[in-house]
Length: 390
Ligand code: BMA
Image (cartoon, rainbow, N blue to C red):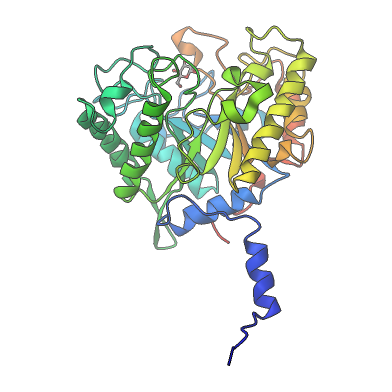
């Protein structure tokens, strides 16, 4: 006799609704908080988190003292709130330096990341990696990748660098109510690879080698039990062909089993000086790019983000409301990105002024930033939902 198995309707409904968004990280061993973060990022829209690189480390007019001083941020000085996403960059780790390429001590970074997590914020790490072959900084067209991937003559040096990352990452643990938690990190290695300015970039590195580099990085870190990582892929907008977005975006993409977040770095459509298109056309492209990105992410059941961007010097009047958030909140598709992070506010004491992408007190667009902050759909740390529980 044939037995017909029937699935109770309630269970079926439950299974179906939870599969609307797969929300599975590529690392099946990921910690509970990491899985929860990823799941919650996928449900954030139409709200979008605001992020700022190095926000707690320094600002245009001040330099942080790690645990020796109260937390500060240019964003907080203007709006009263810390950004929801804190960016950090490990350029310089592995070379024996105790600080990164912009002068932030790695031990201070650890503290800022921990404090941000305790306050409910999200952390992301990029890595302007010095070349493990000759310690040249990231900006060179020399071709090192082939020698660093498995089978390459300097492969062991890449492993040494990845081990230095592991050393840092393993220490990103905090005690919360007696429970040791490994702080989830959105890890964004090998970024802007479709540009030709970094040694892992297009032209001097073949697509095949780049993919081998990406895959090795993920497999190695997963193999070493780095279960707090969410992997983000982030090509640069200036080298994307908007007519063939999908094809050009996926250049160097190692596959759905190797990427969790589809990001993209966009300075280009936000008034980059080399972009000679009228502001209106740029805005159209900004909106279109976000739509195409979030469509692709939806198709792949993945989270998306504006991983990096902004306008250097924020010179344009009403940049925050009329360009940045006008694009991000243009429609239901654009606002599906989980976060938008602007790059760092360089500290002026070194003499270089005008290299900033956030706001700071008395900057000419500070009032406009406050209006942007009051948009109920933009999330800073004061309105962030609990992203680490389900
Ligand atoms: C670049 C610039 C550099 C900086 C680097 C890494 O875009 O901001 O000044 O060293 O990022 O943060």
